[in-house]
Amino acid sequence: MDVPPFPRLAGHPLRWRLLTELAGGDLRVRELVARVGQPQNLVSYHLRLLRDGGLVTATRSAHDARDTYYHLDLARCATELTATASALHPALTTAGSPPVAGPASVLFVCTGNSARSPIAEALLRHRTAGAVTVLSAGVRPKPRVHPHTARVLRDGFGIEDAPPETRHLNTLTGRRFDHVVTLCDRARENCPDFGGRARHWSLPDPGDDYAAFTRTAAEIDTRVHHFLKGQLR
Image (cartoon, rainbow, N blue to C red; front, top):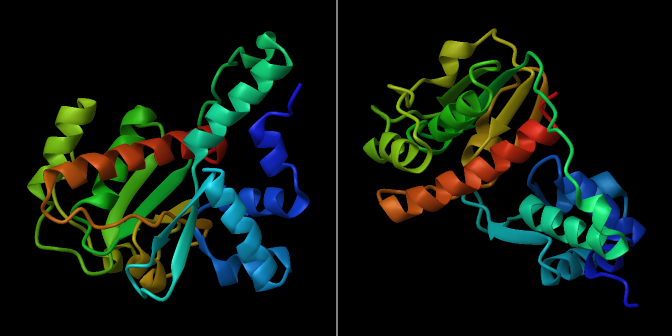
């Protein structure tokens, strides 16, 4: 019997290390090189294999187009792991109860605080039924939350209470958060330290296109789902 694709691809020690590093958030090659302590050409080679296998994706940085952010596709990993477990024994695919988030505070940050970060704020609040303290803010907030933000939350997720207005990061000076998640590359480069654990989700600005808002919200919802299950404890 052939070995399933996931253990063949992820079983290499360096590739497994790269996957575990990316599980915490999107990273650039030089950051992965520093974390795993291996030469850049070797890291790039194994990243290419992970990309070819569909476990990792890459996007150009919106802050500096010379940079590329690598992202672990957790949904694809979950599918591959389920298939691997099923290949070993069908009973192994039985899902257990999802972990319950404990008290925590989360700050989502993007540049304008009009689309990505308020969507993330609303989705996490919705998924935890208000059990988590969650806010969003921008490094250069726009005058108002984009109208597509409320629309996509309502139409896609049945959420009626979208954040009503934007917030500047300066208004949170002195606050501490257990988790700080930046959702755009410019915000990552300009976000001050709020304590706790920082992670980055490299997501493009949806602009004024509602279809792009729909795709962005779906991506954020997937990331929030895995963040809640695996990292927000």
